[in-house]
Image (cartoon, rainbow, N blue to C red; front, side, top):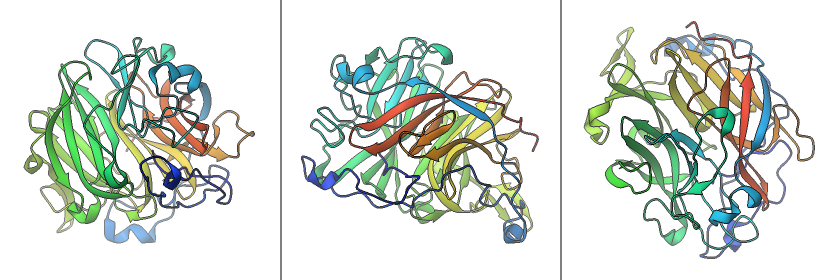
Length: 381
């Protein structure tokens, strides 16, 4: 669970301090603005010249809600009526696994039986037919890895993906927005059980290697984007590549950086786009190219960029706004109260793009939803 962004001035929020186990209060995040707005700096590819360029206009695809994926009616029978994130990954057996963050039973957020992460499953994986009809753990969705929440720590997933018959999961560990370390896990049984692979220190690259997302490419590499995991902090966006056979070997992650007038693998990592306050991020190979989605904190929105290559020019590629904020009771089309997440559903195309969108604005409005986005402009960078 991440602190909910808001389209209105900060008001009363669920108080985690009052929950069982002495869970600490979450860090306050910036209030968003209603409306799509323009990109917060789509700039030149040379880092030193970034401040001299103006923003490109953000495109405006159409969006519409398909359904709630989680909630009392949808996932209450798995003891998971209140959950978020729902990062979707197609399993080797053809089902779709949604890996969720902080999850509660009872009457609302902060109720009993706090677990993170959990796995909810749709036996059908086609984007148009997704519906949660199972969970890892059966009638009671259990935590996928050990996490006792001692002292308010939790295990927030930042990515889940599949290569061949193996699934991989990246988790950020510690008190929310104070990441002690991140760790990496694998599953060879469709996400039912997970084995620990390795961990990464929370302070690596000044904390900008905490939140990671992996694009599985056809060249034998995964391309990894990373940021700090804290919406209040301005962070670079870093790029690494790692052989798919060495995902659990931290030393095998090779950075992409700008030095001596050129970009190259092996240089110290430098930001590949304008630094900003990032929410959740998702990077995927798709349709012969790449798609990158993220929660933009200023102006609040869910955005996407489309690229030909993982090393394409992020600075100059237009940022297309998929989801804009509104207030509760005024939701329509692609306007969502307190949106975050925005993870790409496997099987998406530029013409039929599906995302898992989270929402949290009070104790009983905390869920994962399925949205379809149409009208994306293809990447040409």
